[in-house]
Length: 252
Ligand SMILES: Nc1ncnc2c1ncn2[C@@H]1O[C@H](COP(=O)(O)OP(=O)(O)OP(=O)(O)O)[C@@H](O)[C@H]1O
Ligand SMILES: [Mg+2]
Image (cartoon, rainbow, N blue to C red; front, side):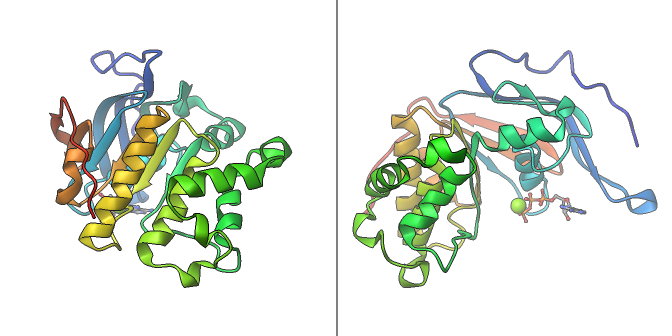
């Protein structure tokens, strides 16, 4: 394996205000002759409370970045500090503990079909142990109200529309008050209006509660909801657009 130092002296310096700080991140998939480099010396600093969209063509490495930041994959070279924890040096226990502080939202909502909406939201608290579960009903109901699904609390996922299911997934990701939300194409299966409403909601809740969001998206219609848009190409960040006053409007 190619060895690279775990820090890049030219990259961003971790700050107490950083939710994510990536330095010189490289990644390879495969073994032997099929081994292929996917990420090339990536640098990125995401401040706490920022909403970042990560864009780029299929296969450029967006999901790989997300999984490395989320501790779902081990860092091979370079440095990834997630919520102040150096993932490159983290043992399994530390990676699990860090994952528990992150809310994940996937392209497919991954709801449990045999659980009600309220019970699905409860799943977001389960990894946090008995203390978090003590008032699960109250917390789950409050976040469900936040995503406008109170009257669906006792319904099952099969009874919900795609947009409603994705709102349950957002509620599940936010219920534990995770400081960081990692979302991988959460609007991919939604129509234009529902997709925008869903990200609007995520944006509003994240801003109200000062959460950091790193979201992969192909959706050009929601770009105004980001503080910063990063474009990737062939494993590199090739462009960055900072939006001084991101717009938010309610789509009906
Ligand atoms: N587990 C794996 N084993 C081998 N190669 C992989 C693996 N996961 C991803 N890759 C390869 O790494 C590259 C980047 O994949 P990644 O999933 O990060 O892309 P992406 O930008 O998220 O693409 P998409 O927009 O299609 O989701 C692709 O060439 C992919 O085939
Ligand atoms: Mg992907």
